[in-house]
Image (cartoon, rainbow, N blue to C red; front, side):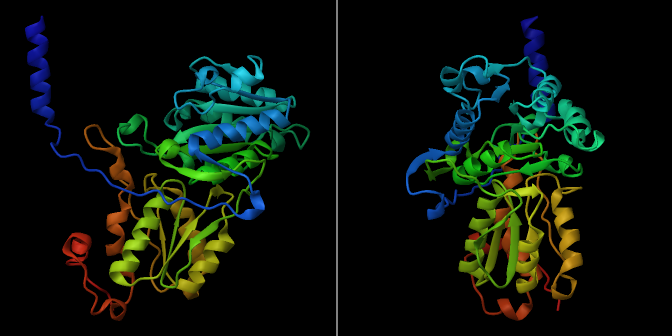
Length: 388
């Protein structure tokens, strides 16, 4: 029996022949500095601690607030809820069965009777069993009752994005699946400062919210976070870097990928790039993006989710309509790679090394004449035809 199993295993390895080289991207986290208006006292936190701090503040100021989900009682698999049950008791912080549909259904129920529900879906990849509850019940509860009932005190937290070893079941970015549904708000923070302020805004918002946390940033993202109670408006983008040649829009982890790529493009190509973090994609800040594109005339949109029907298409459609006479080149949405077994899922965030070729394609020839760069940085530019 053991010989048979060993032979089968060897045959499988021989047939599959996983690549010896793992393709991975690299990005450097770009920390933010909180404005003075959010408070003078600061505490060093990573994104996980910032999320925990936001829930702590929400539960301390709202006695009806409940935190529940798979394994949250002991802190959760990512430790985002650690210490909350000890502080607020088992009646307010508790585990649920491994049933995402049940978690969402229970959250809707307690929210409709007046409680503030903070539900955790352990991985965004497994939010789909709860899809019917979220889009047909939570999102439409106020509308179908003519305003008599609401489950606005509902926030669903879930992880999202690639982390390096999660493959296809722990690396997805499902945000676009929910933006087609009126009645929901979708938020994706880029770091601890935004995570705390935006999560508090979601918890206190009159509409149900889905708060997606890029898990690769849980420990990697560290900032000096305001210690007090503060909120960041949902639906308001932030311009992280001003530029005049091209606008790049992203959210979540991709903000750091494009920020690093924008720096490379500026150093090697002399291209002035404007970087925008949407922060929330439903609603999204159309005015901010339109104003930027009117100035630069060019737009690149980057997201980890698959290209087909991704939210980048919605942004492109809207900006094409609003900024048609200002556009110098078609709007570009680079394709992300969906992670497969044996290939690092961080390949899905590899735009940083592809961006220079995108810029070369959309900028006029005379902007790049005479520019030289090192082969290792700009090899991707070779052979790219420049339209006149």
